[in-house]
Image (tube, rainbow, N blue to C red; front, side, top):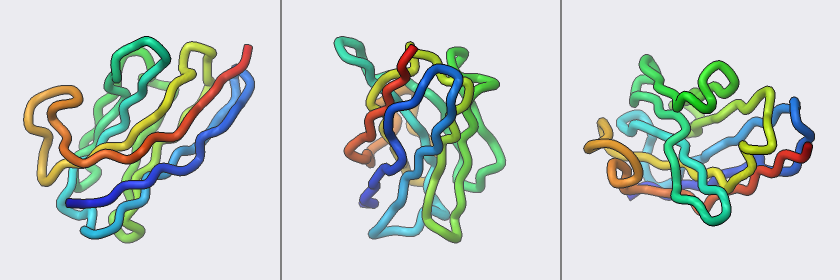
Length: 124
């Protein structure tokens, strides 16, 4: 198992930016695919972006494509999510997730290691 801790959440005005970090311990992230999900109050946890273990392939949800960027620094054992052009509807708790080699399916069930989440609040 790999332990994940997210950093970087906070409150920002609409149009602003944040960078979330997800630092791993216990295992190296070299062999782990990573993803970011988010959960707004009263809603289900939803996929935001994922990245292959090498960092060579990324995917984004339609809601964040062209505004968010996922990246992975295996040397620092850290994954990142750069959030730009933020909107009030981006307000949620953001979770990073990891799974060995590649996701087993789609969505939340495809990942078996999770961080505790970090709150992002976007004010209008």
